Length: 151
Image (cartoon, rainbow, N blue to C red; front, side, top):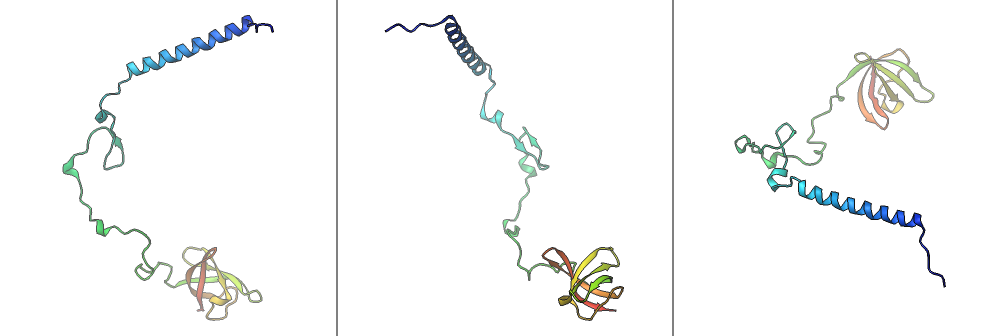
């Protein structure tokens, strides 16, 4: 069998690869020698009371004691929470109501927002342009008018 011959091009590529590898190794050694490194304390960063990262150690005299028992984790139970501001009665005007389909919309007098109303949330029968008082409850798609009374 014939001996495998290396062409001039293959030799040049191999030389370039070796040269590149040696340069990479030299750069690695140079970086290690010139790195500041230093002590662990020089690498630590602190967070001040405003949330900014700083290299100065915080003053222990400025430390604030926090009562761990006063921290609440989770959502408070419904009976513990204060009533929502939606529970108070609002005044408005019926802008649209379809009695055959059983729904409509009420415009709040103060905020001019439209609220959905369903026939199940009515106390009195209503028609368009009636002045009404109502309360708000969170529904699946937003706030709904409930306990709607005609004025």
